[in-house]
Image 1 (cartoon, rainbow, N blue to C red):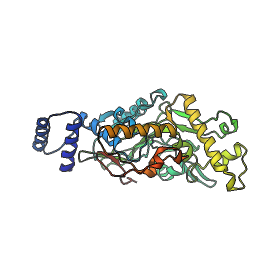
Image 2 (cartoon, rainbow, N blue to C red; image 1 turned 60 degrees about the horizontal axis):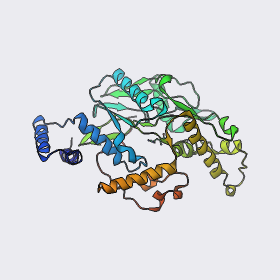
Image 3 (spheres, helix red, strand yellow; image 1 turned 180 degrees about the vertical axis):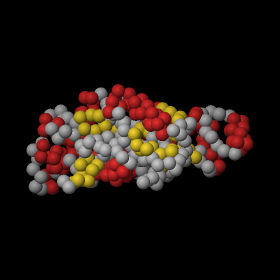
Image 4 (tube, protein in one colour; image 1 turned 45 degrees about the vertical axis):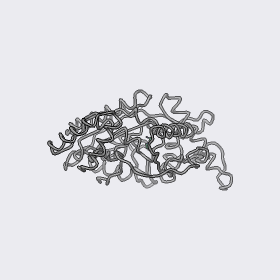
Length: 348
Ligand code: ARG
């Protein structure tokens, strides 16, 4: 634990939640007596929200105050942690009306090995990779632990949970907890026949939540998707599902010359299909134009609160038509404030 960060955090908490100077002094004194800072649920709730506000790569920060926090720091049993993760998935999914949630586990003692709670496996086969190439190493690890997937392009990986120095255990997520959306296009039936689908809720589980000088090594959090994450990256990247050639073929575009912009045309139709499908299925999603407008409101809100707005431009601009958003046209300082969410060393 880092005392300076603890003091900075409690000072921020005091200022933003209208505590008195006297409150701060006695809280600090109490922590000194205890010899350890154990944040209250109110403190980590505030911290988790501010950590979102400080997430420079995130375009969706307008909604930082709506983050709902589950304080599960008392859980040290893998089965109980698994059940808390299922609860997170259920409450966040909310039948499609996705709620931003974070579940916070015991700092330094719990680790979730998955990148996201729900993600698709990837298998190296003689015919090339089946599934998500990004998941190949983690999938191999799951199989070493004894997991067996069906071998489709969309096998949901098990949850891999570690407590202290024990060997991690894997837990299959029962299908009824995983909401998925089949990809269909409003006009091109041939896109439906590519049989693409994606899961509803992106729940990042690999990052460290740094708050008040404490590292919460397991603190999975989610918002809802921006369409381009799926349509312009997960499906489109050559190192992911690499679907642009198949989409171009499906909608009858010749692929013999770059200058026909067949990739760009396929990309737009694929992204239309993703947004259309989520809407049709009643699952929350935001297009990149609306997300940029919401980010503008966030900037204004931060200005009114007299806070400097920070961001990572390379992440904030959407991967589709970036220059159509205001974000593209202005610089933004990538200064890292705490509390925040950080990458941590992969446990495998
Ligand atoms: N880009 C990641 C994915 O496609 C998800 C990252 C978090 N995204 C979000 N909208 N909260 O799976």
